[in-house]
Image (tube, rainbow, N blue to C red; front, side, top):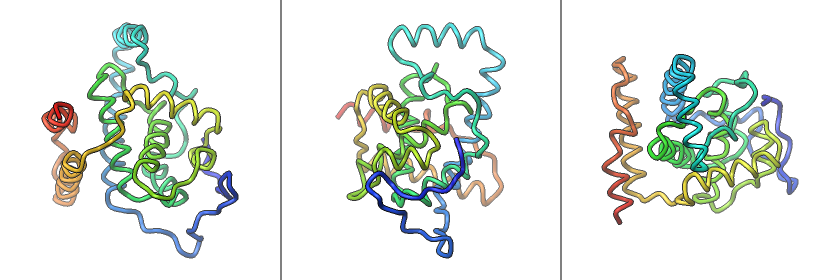
Length: 219
C-alpha cells in the first residue's frame, strides 16, 4: 500500500479537494482511528501469544468458509490507521456517515466471527472495502472500485475480490437501520467525551451493541 497521490478515477473524474483547500478531519474519524488502533494492538498481541490456538480456530472457521486471510497483506502497511482514514476521506469525498457504517460492518464481523481477528495485516484492506461498500449504500454519487483501489493502495482486481468476500461474510446484510446507526454514533460521541476528559476507554462495542444488533436481527 502506498501514500502516493490519486489523480483520477476510472471515469476520468478528479477529487474535488485541492492542496489549498484541505478538508478538515471529521471528529468521527479521530474516534474511529483510536478505537481501531486499540483493537488492532490488542489483537496483534493475542495473535503472537496464541498462535497455535488461533491456527486451530482459523482452520475451523475456514472449514465453514469464514476467513479474513483474503484481507491479509504480506506485511503491515507503513501508513497508520488515522492517516489511512484521512486519505480515504480526502480523496473519496464520501460522507462521514460512510465511515460509521463501514465500522459497523467490521464490528458485525467481530460479533459474528469472534475467532477472526482484526489485526495490522488486514485492518487497512477491511477499512477501504467496508467504506467503499458503505458509500455505495449511502451516497447518491460515489467513486467506482478502480478509484477506491488507487486510494487504498491495492489493485482493482484485489479490491473487487475483497468486496465480494466482505459481502459474503456479512451474508449481504449491509443495510443499517437508523436506530443501530444512532446507537453507534452515541457510543462514539461518548468516547470523545472520555478522551477529552482523559478517561480510559472502557466499553466494548461488541458487548454494548449486542442488544441493538439482536433487536435489529429479530425484526
